[in-house]
Image (cartoon, rainbow, N blue to C red; front, side, top):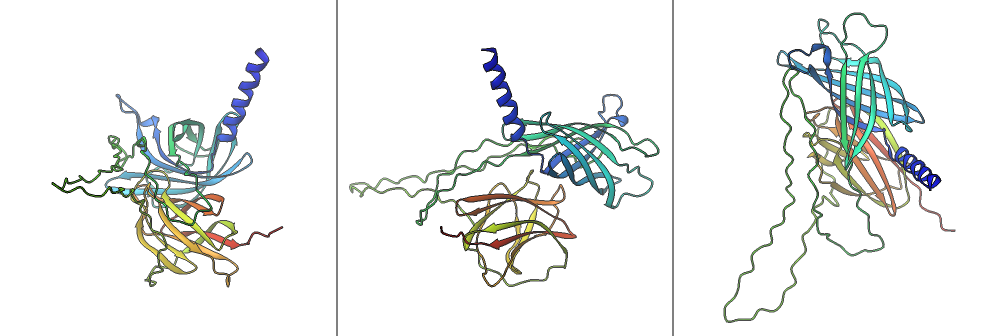
Amino acid sequence: MKKIVQLLAAVFLTSAAFAQEFKGQWKGQFTDNSTSFMGWSGDRCDYVLELETNGSNVTGYSYTYFNDGGKRYYTICRLKGKLNKKSAYVEVTEVERTKTNVPSHIRNCFQVHKLTYFKQGDTQTLEGSWTPAPNQEGDCGYGTTVLSRRILKKNTPLFNNTTARANKPEKKAAAKPVTKFTDKNKVTAPPVAKNNNKFIAPPVKAIPETKPEPQVPNPPVVKTDQNIKPRPDVNFEKRNNNLLKTIEIENETFKVDLYDNGDIDGDTISLFFNGKLLLSHKRLSDKALTLNLNVEDSKDVNELVMYADNLGSIPPNTALMIVTDGGKRYEVRISSDLEKSGVIRFVHKPKTTQ
């Protein structure tokens, strides 16, 4: 019996370790406990981590935002670190400041964040502490860090059916909101998530003295932006393109669903495919923007470019893209800002028949 319990525990720990996914974007805040006094927990800053993992190595970028004197300041840093999936622990160190508008009279130190992974329901969190990076002068503070992101539920696609279908929308529990701080010295109350997925059936009017033929009610239609026709190109400022992923596509037609990645914070995007404008100033949300795309065989590579129209309330502009290619499914997190656009490349490689 003891051996069975030990075996089950080992299987559970192994499954939990493989279920962890540190890669991607995490949003939240860090608190400077060195500024706390008389019940005030300390100054808080909005904080975003974008992590890439390769084995136990971690690279990526951090984004810090705070308000001071009515102005919004930011700092973008390159980072590196290590993770341990067995202990669900990741440690990242900011090593290079790539962009900032913080004036010199405000302390702007590199930080080390030591975080542990937790999961509850559809919410993943990284919680822990931060300290100043080594070899810095002056008082850089110390404190706690809480970051989170939600998990989108996967819809199992139905294949080999060419007829149009409309599925009854599922009732989804409201996602737990993450508090956003718009002022460095003021904590705002968390917003209340609203569930707008209500369907009210139209009343059926009784017709006196006549017996109507039985009617089958039409099922609710799931609204999607399918088969969007290319729009004429408009003036978009030139930006650098950042290649994020290359995906091999077997079919000539594939589907792309776009969601806001993380908090719904007002991100709007424009989308280009092979240089043609498909979507213009579309807002990302937890409802998919859906496109059916056709590869161009005349091109070796088909490119999808996400252009950020704004940065939302918590920069950068980020999207979760789900690509469905027949029976295959890919998830890609795209990040764009006002200087660079995220690019996904598609290479058409038809499946060979044996």
